[in-house]
Length: 427
Image (cartoon, rainbow, N blue to C red):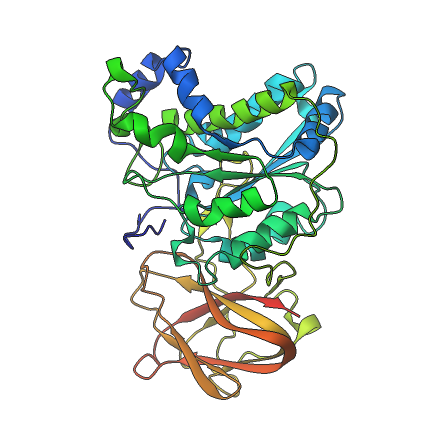
């Protein structure tokens, strides 16, 4: 995960973390008091905004009637479950799903489905592109509840919140009108982007849960003055929660569910016709990759003729195995050009985001990108230096037009590999 300091957890998003002192963590899990009045006060402080309750109460009532309900999570490594062990059963997403089943579908919990789509080290700039594939599963799933968690991942969002608001609006605009909940996690240094992102939630009157509001003030207090949990207990490292931390996040979401259930139904659903507070340019962004490129654009792959299989992996849903991200990619292998070494994409669009692979392997080098014949950017796979998905905004324009994107290896890197994972485009 990339924080405001630019530091990176090298293991994030690749596998469940290995705690060198699991015995100590297990003792904390067994001894921690989830029932004290101070704990409940802390959880109450996490409710930043109850929001318009029509959509969430609709999902709760469906569950009570025994109808199928899908609860979905999209975010970074905390949503993935980093810091929790085992990652697929101790993440806040899994605990929240279990809470929801126990609260509203105790007699037939199989009617509630979990969609977990957290990817380590990635911002909403990538999340808005992934939403159709990883949450909606290309149209096969219609979530009733969507929890969005990017408050500690969006420091490097080049759109400064435009992609975040676009993702929120994309979810809200789904035909089945799901409840959208904004979740603000926090780093050990008390930092997150709540000040930038919470105004989006207030603007559309969405339910919001803040771990910063719940935790930060009490971190400074001893137990006899209102302290509930220390940073050493809550954080697995400087970014991710422990098992107890993940449980606390889930309890905060369960508190929102509980309060919403007990609150009278709002008279009308909030309107989505408001002018965006940051921007909505990426609401209709789509993924272009090797699987669908020929149906959308003209592509000359040049020496980007191979498919990279050494990809970032993430445990989706409640799976204990990793799923490779962006498997339909183009990898440059030096010396194997078909006609030209360059990858060329001819595409009509107004906005374009390149998704490429970061790597710690010396085999990978920097690529240079031209847009409409002019040098635009360079993509350095060692900027982060671990295997994960990197989003880079190539351009953002007011109108749709034909563009030519050319990617080849930068001077001095001709003997290196480079992987284009895909593109996010708005047409």
